[in-house]
Image (cartoon, rainbow, N blue to C red; front, top):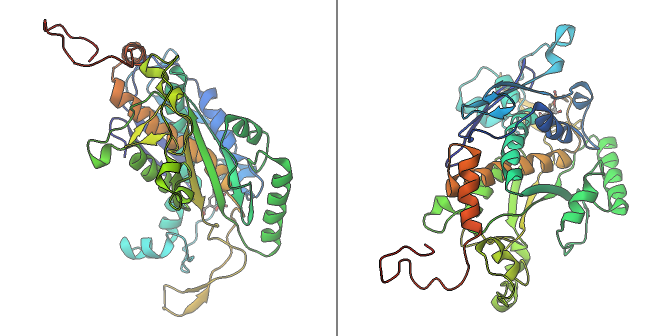
Amino acid sequence: MLRRLRFASAGYSHGPGILALLDGMPAGLPLETAWIDHDLQRRQRGYGRGHRMALESDKAQLLSGVYQGRTDGSPIAIFISNREHEGARAPNLQPLYIPRPGHADFAGYAKYSLPDCRPVWERASARETAARVAAGAVARRLLHELGIRIGSYVQQIGSVALEPNEEPTWALVEAAERSDVRCPLEAVAERMRSEIDTARQAGDSVGGVFVVLAEGLPPGLGSYSQWECRLDARLGGAILSIPGVKGIEIGPAFANAGRPGTEVQDPIGPAEPVTRVGSMGALRQSNNSGGVEGGMSTGQRLVVRAAMKPIPTTLAPQPSIDLRTGAAAETEYRRSDICAVPAAAVVGEAMVSLVLADAVLEKFGGDSLLELLAAYSSYVEKPLFGRASWTGADGERRQA
Ligand code: EPS
């Protein structure tokens, strides 16, 4: 999924903390913990989160990869401690014998021949997404240097949704930032909160749909040349790796599937006044592609939409079995969130940032930020038209 960057995480939901490792970032990128903490705190917010978030106050500790306030080309290691684990608060981790339907518990127990589900629960918990947000913030910092910005909003919680044909704009992202359900329209947000309240009272949980936008992308990130190079494939894998996410679309993909071909393309032109490769996205008159054509960025806004199922941990018991005997049993309630869609949207931003930073590094390369920026400028400043051949008759290279 990532071709030039490497990202891995380690740690348990109720262990000492979560570790993020990001390798392959160029040297010279300004990086402060405050930049990472900002996103960590955005992930923790959200109406419908459980008591755990009131306890935690996620902060990044940079263990390596930064020298005098800038990345130095070494692997970047970030530790986020679990405050719950400190002192007398350290939880007593009992074995768990009743797997929750919808969680990794049952298949994980069988796959690793474990004595019970506790190790699965600890690692499969969405607490791990704090590491993704930390690494994603570093990726976002790189994209920021190229004028690329990434944001999100929540389109649906439970049965309450924005209008389906609401045009995804940056104004929605900005309005969502002020909302505790990340919904840009307060009237809809109010109904989303009541949906969460109703689920809480019923001992239930709710899922939803979030949208991630990226603006300022150069055209040509990703490639059509091999299946695993395609930007949409890479985004799809990254988004589907978020716990609870079961569906993704790029642009209005599912709606377009039912429309005629002549209506769902994005007409090109007129050419004036665009003359450079870097602004070719401005030549498109609509964005049905969601910013990706043929596995490459078009230079338009990227629109990624993801469906998250309701959290499987519910106060209301669900049918299961006891792993000690195979006898029927009901799930026992463990503290959890009622709705984590607003947090998942921030995780979605992180995953999109990682994929885009990776594609940027793949296209422009460089061991330092300066090298990368030089390659980027030379690409976006190239003339868009009149490149009939790669080399002149005299053998001189032209605009290859
Ligand atoms: C989660 C269960 C809850 C959530 C957790 C994800 O944690 P706990 O079991 O400690 O109450 O709050 O999310 C986080 C801790 C987090 O940082 O997002 C689960 O089972 O997936």
